[in-house]
Amino acid sequence: GNVNTITGSGSNLYVGGSFAIIGGQIRSNIARFNNVTGEIDAVWNPNASLQIRAITVDGSNIYAGGNFTTIGGQSRRSIARLNNTDGQADSWNPNADGGVYGITVYGSNIYVAGVFNNIDGKAINMLAKLDNTDGHADPAWHPNPSSSCNRIIPSGTDFYVQGSFDYIGEVPRNDLAKISIATGTLDATWNPNAGAGTSVYSMVVSGSNIYAAGSFTSIGGQSRNRIARLNNTNGNADSWNPNSSSSILSIYLSGSYIYAGGNFTTIGGQPRNRIARLNTSDGMADSWNPDANSTVRSIDFSGSDVFIGGDFNTIGGSAQQSFAYFTDKPLPVELLSFNANAEGSKVTLRWQTASELNNHGFYIERKNGENNGWKEIGFIKGSGSANTPMSYSYEDRGLTANYPNPFNPSTSIDFQLPADSKVTLKIYDITGKEVRVLLNNEIRTANYYTIRFDGSSLSSGIYYYKISASDTRGQNKYEQIKKMALIK
Image 1 (tube, rainbow, N blue to C red):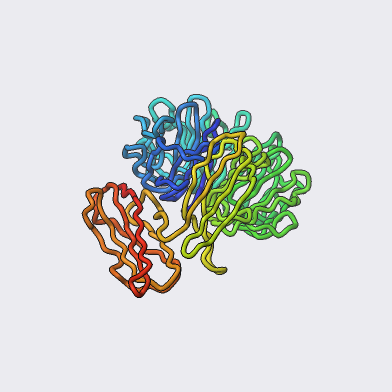
Image 2 (cartoon, rainbow, N blue to C red):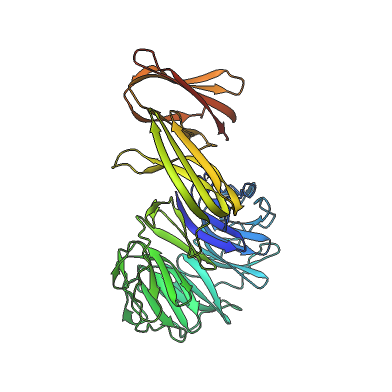
């Protein structure tokens, strides 16, 4: 899966993309987290049928855009308004016939950008102005871009629009344009001209400066590789030139830095894999280097904390699947001691903390061999906030918790054999009835194993899986049972 968009609002962090599981919970393409503890909201679950590309918060309303056909328990095409309690969709239903990639709330109207040709039953292309009460589109406000738009940014009396278009109405404009908020008419003077066949994916307006990023190689009358700074008068580029080696999908201005994410491997005069921090004075990359192993698609801030989304599974030197958090704050846990003890087939971890601040808990990971990655095998709940020493332990032996759990329709069951063994692995329903035999007294060599269990033919509910193992002589018997939940 991947994370396309991140939007912070107070203590909440809204995340959208193309995923089935996030934060250890089943969530279809959209989720809400506490931005302090990192804990996923257990109640707010809109359950979008397809990917989310945009999330905008306006008071108690959450606007979501993407390519879905159902969300918040309702049939909704590409755009919906959700409540902030449980994520249900209300009656507001503009019904776009194509994807919605950008949503901007301005006054009493909602402005949307995307790849639609019809919205609210009206032939309106790519950009539309919607009433925030009933979702009706204003047919008089119709800039009419020739192709897709992905974001609208207000500045004074104008909107800056970005995308992959070649025209606004009948006037040539490549990927960037400035239009009147009141009428939707094109500004005749501002024309950076990013070049045909390219795209602008992200933009930041700061006073008289407009930072633009995408796939272009020239813009504002200058040779500029994928990122540039333009003036707000005629769109010309100034001398600021970070020179990215490949496309940039997201930029964010914080203080005197531009944070950039995308597919590049060099930017700002330094080798940087897909994410970098650039100085606004000269465009050079500083020492901040999270080093993502795949595409970075979104960057957002909450105070001094940086939230990053994309396609990566490692970033900042650790395993992080598609979503990561960087902070300069003191770590929430002060560790006093950590010990590991191996005894036969059992490994026991014990640790003690001196203090904890908003500590959700500890994820346990295991690595099997130098050429394999780390894999989550357990979770130990933390103590929240504590000023006295707290002790914890975890035992890794035999059967580990299945993942994901809850699951739909399949999950992985891992187990460890310290010696060659005869193994039986069975699934039981909540009444104790045997419903599936995955292994039946099979001989397996000493190793870690993953067995895939498909529950497509079973109904939702609680199930148990039981492993029975003995050595090849039938001695040193071992049994363990764990619980899992199938939710369809």
